[in-house]
Image (cartoon, rainbow, N blue to C red; front, side, top):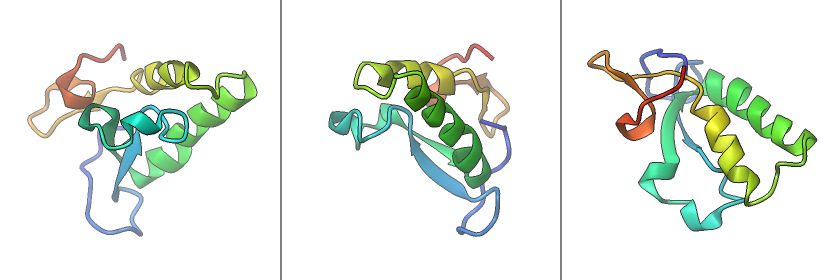
Amino acid sequence: MCGVVLREGRRQKTAAVVDHIRPYDLRPDLELEPDNLWSVCRDCHDRECRRIEDKARSIRQWTPRGADWIASEKMRFRFVSLDGSVGGPGGKPSRA
C-alpha cells in the first residue's frame, strides 16, 4: 500500500502481513484464494486496512456485497513491486 520494502518478523512496522482484500468473515469462500490476498506492511494493515474496514462498518457496507466496496477502497492504494512497476495485487493496474 505504501511502497515500503517488506521485512521478515512481526515487530517492525515494515513486517509483512497477509491481508484479505475482501475480508474473510464476509467472503469465507475467498479465504485462501491468491487473488484475494496481498502482502502489506504491518503499519498499513493496522492503520489503512483497518480504517477502510471500520468505515465499511459505519456506512453499512459490512456485508458480503460490501466486500467488493472494501476491495475497491483498498485498490486505491498504489502497489509498487520490487522491479518498480506499479499496479495492484497480482499486477493489476491501480487507480492511485
